[in-house]
Amino acid sequence: MKNYLIRVNGNEYEVEVEEISKSSGEKKSIVQQTAAPKQEVKKPAQKIETKKEETKKVVDVPQGAESIDAPMPGTVLSIDVNEGDEVKAGQVLLILEAMKMENEILSPRDGKVAAIHTTKGTSVSTGDKLVSIE
Image (cartoon, rainbow, N blue to C red; front, side, top):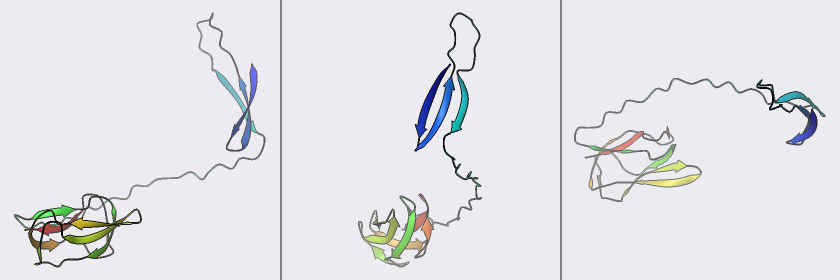
């Protein structure tokens, strides 16, 4: 048996380790813990994760229209177009804040805004429908 003093995050533990003899075919436990901390250790509160039932918002995209989806999770800061507006390729449709950065969501092509599927201040997930263009 060998005794070791191990430090983890500033806490010291005394550990006793037993060697296994190779001659006997038996498997023995390698470590016998006498891990008595030298100082009081506070265990972090155990997190219990509960999954919320995610309700996917059903969005009706007009027939023949192309939907522009959120490329990342974030919050809609502003919507720069209205339904019925004519847009050009590369025109800013809305601003999406993600990771403290403002990201411009651009129109992929020329067309007319068929529908807006979000509102200012809404949190969106990756893949959520934002705008439809005909």
